[in-house]
Image (cartoon, rainbow, N blue to C red; front, side, top):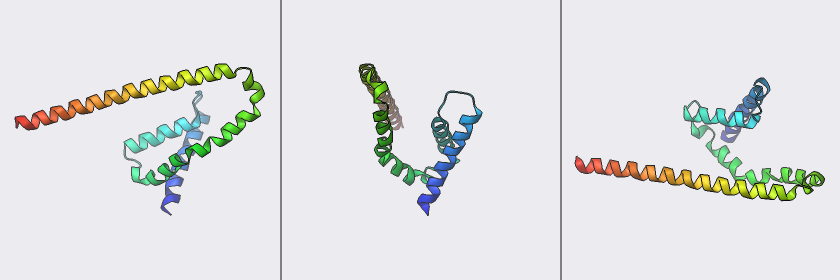
Length: 128
């Protein structure tokens, strides 16, 4: 029953994202609206993390399986993609490297800030 309740919460938020997608004339996918709503609800504790954690972890674990239909769809459109496959490969490599570099830099920034905050806390304890 716990998983059904958690899944229902996620589906309801996704549905609200679909409604917003229809109401707001922006080129933003409904899933983005849904994930923003879920993020805000989790940050403000309107929805406690424990209310969606188990089902969320399950959905993350099976995420690779969810890409199979999209990959199969690419096979259907191979005639269109084939003429630009080199462009797609180059774009994929560049964006992947860009995401890796930015993720690494942001991670390093957070690690440095965490170490600095810990160092300041340790320094304050020593002064007391």
